[in-house]
Length: 285
Length: 302
Figure 1: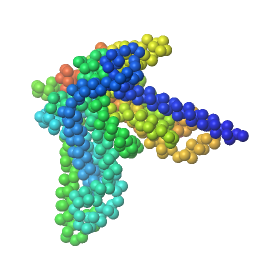
Figure 2: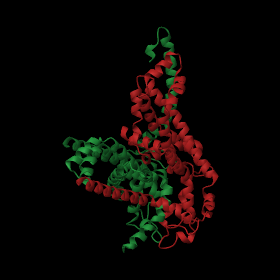
Figure 3: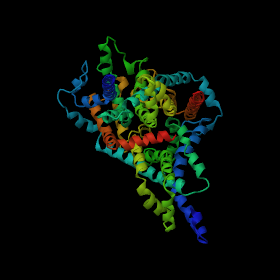
Figure 4: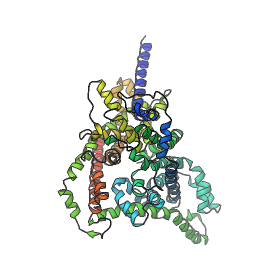
């Protein structure tokens, strides 16, 4: 007798739990859902009270207008910025992580310790002197100034790769060395093919971070040639002042979605690796 | 590894090893030194100097630090930083924990809803700014529309002196939650099912299990999350304020980080701005150390 009752109580609790979760999730993403819906409305529809949930008809024109702001040049710039950082930083972080893990030398521990410094230095503390260094190097308003100072924050990648490679079987490396393979061959032909998981994790995190970076590209690359998506989008925010410059809100919603599209698509595609990367970094420290 | 080599070959290989060690390490270390370590050092040194970017750098000793105490903008900016932290940190930690527990559940369709909670991670501050400025719009926005349903006339939010800071805090919470949820999910995976089963047999109800058993089991995650969120709420509201309110209205959303940015890039007082960021750094360090200390004491007692 008791069992079925318990079971149905359990089932009720589960239904409640499921409903709460779904409701919370929908509220949580509501600002983004409304961004999609609003980006398809007319100007009248986004400025009515009470606000409307859905457009009465799909208004694609907003996206055509938004492409004036988010033009191909801006997207190209964002891709150059993001992949410039990703490729350069990946290269120097992976090689250094390899050296620190698999090429034993006396001062390795000191160097590993050095990489822990930025944990205590959040960006907004170091951004003023970083700007000054970039300025003194004559790199303001150039791709070098946009990309290289960010590439310099190698700590995350280097420690991530080192951690992975420390656990990488020594036997494989030693065997290749015995066979007379040089260090570059060990790196490229033995280690690299087996290091896909940490490379994927690192790339996912770096791609998101770089694509969404705002303050740095604003400070060193606010020119037509260098403007990235976040910098182009910023003047459309105007939220506190209640106006949007010359661009109506429905068009700025479309522009915002266009700028976020590459990352959202990428995230939905690579979600699992990405979550593992973040969770992994968290549990290490 | 080079020890495995034999005879006369060792020395030659060692030189070769060192060559490749240099190739692998030096690009990284030089970039890291030039753009991370060196600027940090410069920042410390500049806090003892006066400089307006163009003229000569002048050593002034502790004058910038003395100025911190006479500058009447410092205390209000710091109080606003404390308000950001006070309003934001606890909802982020507890909200993140509760959501993580809710979505840590292997049933059909849950994966999609779990992914929804991660989505803010993918958007830039500018996209978040555009989305939320429409939600907070006093005339046409959803929040005030919802409030009026229950008979409350909503405030002007981002253009109101009292409500701009809480509004920005809500946005930063929203942006911070995904990371907290992910970290708690990772923490929850590590709890052994036996512990939960034992609690069930003991007759603890769901709420008691949640706070009496699950929450203590993820204490190390809570410590990590606390430190991350202290840093986030001391720093992150700066970018959102810069985008949405430009520190206003009437400085209402100018945190200490924002004030340092203004002193550096509007007033061009680089030395003084560096002193402000140094002060902020030490405040942060002190808070982080206190949190870790509290955890140590709590651990000893528990």
